[in-house]
Length: 103
Image (cartoon, rainbow, N blue to C red; front, side, top):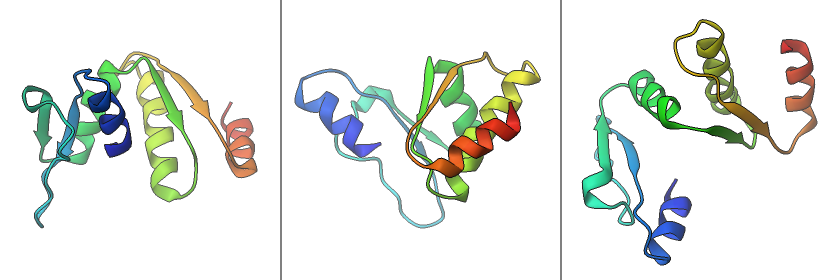
């Protein structure tokens, strides 16, 4: 997320950050607009807030965490817990095979 925040910061656009409060010290990156920095205590709540405001989900699958981030929004939208947002997958063939299995 820091790269996206930095790109927006460099052109003078406001940038938001949804940070998670972990046991160890994790600080928001320096490129987030101070009034748009939100801190969450739970990953699921952070993910829900992110998806409620998203218009699309773009992913570059590469590990189990990415798969979780991709499949949970699909499950939520099918259960009408969040609005359906478009998903764009880039990259590997495994992601394409999983997509065929799901849909």
